[in-house]
Amino acid sequence: MSSTSPDERTLVLIKPDAVRRGLVGEILARFERKGLRIDAMVTRTMDAALADEHYDEHVDKPFYPPLKDFMTGGSLVALVLSGDQVIDVVRGLVGATDGRRAAAGTIRGDLSLSNRENLVHASDSADSAKREIALWFPSSADPRQRRRCAPRTGRSAFHRP
Ligand code: CMP
Image 1 (cartoon, rainbow, N blue to C red):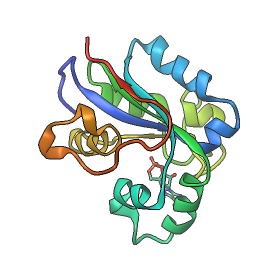
Image 2 (tube, protein in one colour):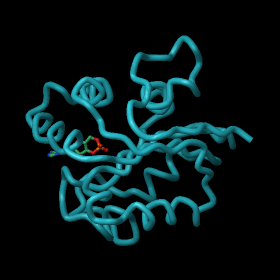
Image 3 (spheres, helix red, strand yellow):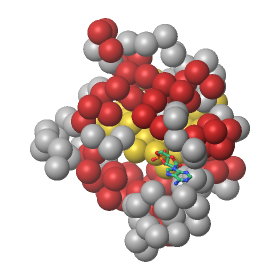
Image 4 (tube, rainbow, N blue to C red):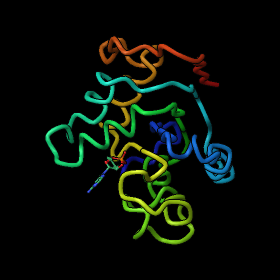
């Protein structure tokens, strides 16, 4: 389990299949109804370099080339969510990686039939969340975490009340 800090944050990508299928509102609504806060949100297209950085741990896996094609093949929505134990809470709402096996009631369990086109990415640990938030929202991160990958399309607003 991750920490219990109410200020915990996580990075979520609403993937190109969800955008294409008109499911962005449905997915955001599930996070909002749970009581999570949307601290930042931007629509953009992932380029090859950002895909390789974001999926650093997967680049040598056999499923990576088609995953990269899929993730760079259309616009997606990147967001930072915050709330109590948000990393674990969001992973629970999203469900298991394979939509065919994910439990009913989860986003993937209700809406996906694929292991790759599984609608949502969510950080899997506090370290991943820190790294991924710095990658997608460099202006929100600790200066030591900032990368060169500032959003190139869309508008981003980062709000910390
Ligand atoms: P995500 O949470 O974005 O993290 C890695 C992604 O790789 C995962 O969701 C899936 O989209 C994809 N993925 C993981 N395992 C497989 C697999 N066995 N076959 C195809 N795609 C996979």
